[in-house]
Amino acid sequence: MEINLKKISDLINNQDNIEDEKKFKLASASLVCSIVDINKLNSNRSCKLFQQNLNLPQDEFELIKRELHNDALDIDDKVSYIKKELNNNMYQIMEFLKILNKFAIVNGCTQKSYREFELIRDKFLREFY
Amino acid sequence: MKLQNFTILYVEDDLTTQEIIKDILASSSKEVFIANDGEEGLKLYKEKNPDIVLSDIAMPNMDGLEMSEAIKKMNPNQPIALFTAFSESAFLKKAAELGVATYILKPLDEEQFFNSLNYMALELELDKMKSE
Image (cartoon, rainbow over all chains, first blue to last red; front, top):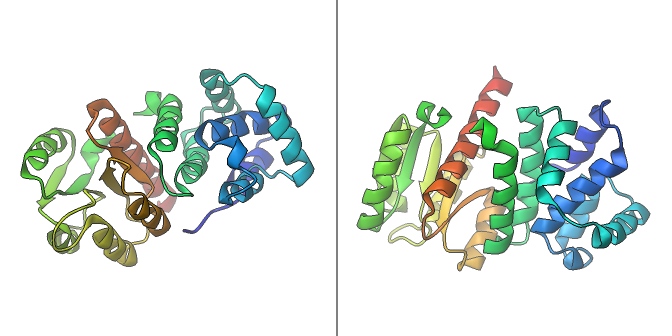
């Protein structure tokens, strides 16, 4: 499967209005980790995808992983923050969701990971349906 | 609803399921084409060139995966969704490799089904916008 990498980092890099890059990366990583088990990130392809899509060098990746363990995951809060940072732009939201979708299916789809992706997807897009 | 702008090919060998989903799709899309297996689905795909393909996986003659592979060879960007109970892990891994990115959980949850269809419709609209 062709993986179109760096999409999220491109979104970050092209967005002058993203106030806090680290906060955006952490929110994105939180959503990814609700789809993919963070404890498996070191041992499978998701790890590489995670780092490349979020433009995370190894040291920053380890730091964010530690923060994710401490960060209480409120999906509604993360979705609403990311939507705001993407100016509620449907095109950019769809690009973001394509990346999340790849995390859901990259190691073969499981019901749990795909359901979680759907939950997040619909929170982002309900107003556009 | 955006879905009403798009045609759908629906491939399913179970006639009871086919009847139920056909009715749902007929009322919400531009046109629905029905096939009973992958072989018939592929033939209909070539004839009708639908916007969206929905298919079961396990079917006689040609399964949903073989059909998806043939379709993706003709049109790599073709949106395809597969119905699955997520018990066919080898099939799903292969499907992901083919670029099938949308899955519809069996047994069907109608709201979730519509959300997935609407997501595909949004992708198609954005692709059209990008190419214009």
